Amino acid sequence: MTRLSVNINKVATLRNARGGNLPDVERFAADCERFGAEGITVHPRPDERHITKKDVYLLKDIVTTEFNIEGNPRSEFVEMVLQVKPKQVTLVPDAHDQITSNHGWDTRAHLNYLTPIVETFKKAGIRVSIFVDAQPQMVEYAKLAGADRVELYTGPYAEIFENSPSEAIKRYSDAAQEARNIGLGLNAGHDLNLKNLKPFVEAFPWVDEVSIGHALISDALYMGIEKTIKEYKKQLH
Image 1 (cartoon, rainbow, N blue to C red):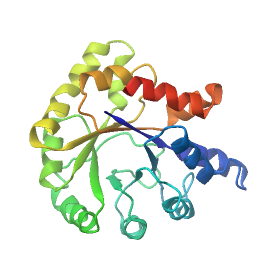
Image 2 (image 1 turned 90 degrees about the horizontal axis):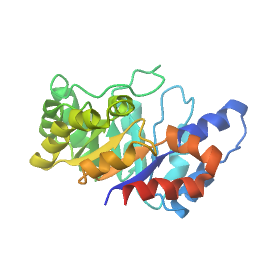
Image 3 (image 1 turned 120 degrees about the vertical axis):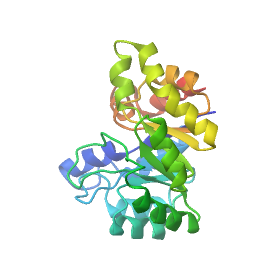
Image 4 (image 1 turned 135 degrees about the vertical axis):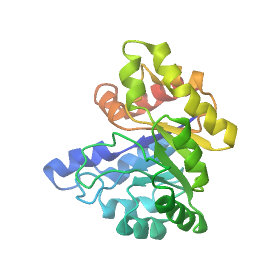
């Protein structure tokens, strides 16, 4: 059964736009869990334009399901993750000024860079997922780097799905199957929504977890967060 992890970055963006503590990011995370989310994802960036370091440390003692911290494993990020010790860390190759994640790691080219970082986190008891494009070779080299899981970047899937759902599934089939064949856990995230989520997990029922933020928080503006989480979980179950 695929688990739902709610990315709460957009909630922090709204708070930071005005200052103060409204909406309360930590309370929102706890409410997401209360309404059925099986994990909380955050992606702190160096400029702290949404999730801040303070948020990450506060959430450490609030999240009771699965805490997933995403980010580029620069030294400052690595230090923070080792202190917080979330259940999972997802390595993402974001530039410091990148608006949103729009590509995965070239795990073959960066194998020697990623391998010791993965080892460091695993020694601390943290599951490691590497964010990759839907290419079997990128999945293969994530395994060689020692990762426990890969997270498939589903931005292209969502874009293709608008016009050709079958083609969108086809584009992801080889990479998803490769993860299964070599014993890697499989996550997915980026631009998944209430229209395209169910076909994805029906095609690849071995997906362990989806991380959804922008669409889910946007839907919550209309439906409320409790109903929204229930609607997303219906797609997964």
